[in-house]
Image 1 (tube, helix red, strand yellow):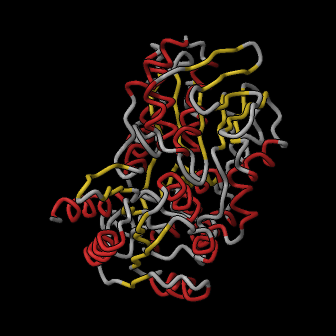
Image 2 (image 1 turned 30 degrees about the horizontal axis):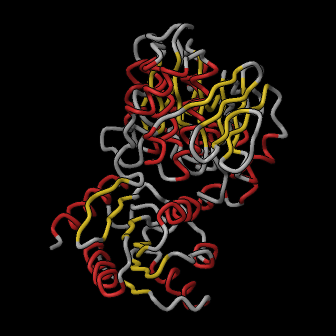
Length: 428
């Protein structure tokens, strides 16, 4: 019988507890949970522990982790522990942006093709709930964040995917190099299968040179060994797989979602799905809420909810998909400035900003002489400011894509997005 301490008792922590308690001694520690043991009690337990299992939000520089290291306690992330105990084939997806949408697309395509595929990890079912249920014939499509990959040096999925890599979570990883190294852990020790990368993303392309397995690319700009877009159809040309995917629905995808879709198409092709099955999947897939979600049109102005856009790279991708727009920016501070964003806002005509990062945004706007900007105290004020500007200046689109996390004013990005939709639907 082993002794475990679970640090973090969210959805996946609870699932891990249920999995372990059947035949182990299990303790729970959570900074914000009254039912957990105290920090002092956790310290006293350390000499008796075999494992410390961390939720993704807990950094290994935490004091409790450092003390466990001194006593030789094995420290694992929740995802790392689950994957070591799961029998299914793993399709693992990482990237600064687009992970959730890409995972949902892959799972949808595989299910249409009658494959036994399940969404697991950050979305779908916690991985530890899958450990006793899935076999080697099943597929787990797993979204992997930089937090989960931070110390995961033994990971070897069947298919790894790197969508894009930009700067994010510097408050945790401190440098861009550390962040990129975390992302590379998704494929760096992969022993079999395929590693798929976005050819159009320079950092992802450079990382691909380190891959040891069969490498494929997706591209919106060039014919590549993998999957590319010719402006109308998606073309798969990868080893002995060759097909052209035609669907009238492709034209409704914003540009960066076509890249996400191509990863899903390529995975479907690698699992031997037919052209007809893949086209049916494209025709029946719907993008999730808060990810470039169309809300409504009012007075010829279209409103889009991209509350999941929590970093600069994501917001720039959203703007490039829409053309001229008014933009709502700001939220909790993740440690970066906004100079890159403001420098590249050629199609953005007005900014309403709020939250902890409001003053940073205003400072960057001043630095680059972007004068059509207004600091606001609430999301309601931002919506009204954008709406008034769009009506007076005939701007066709208003976009919520904050380039920031939501925790300064909202519980999460979903609550922020829902509040945005409520405000938009109340406008007249």
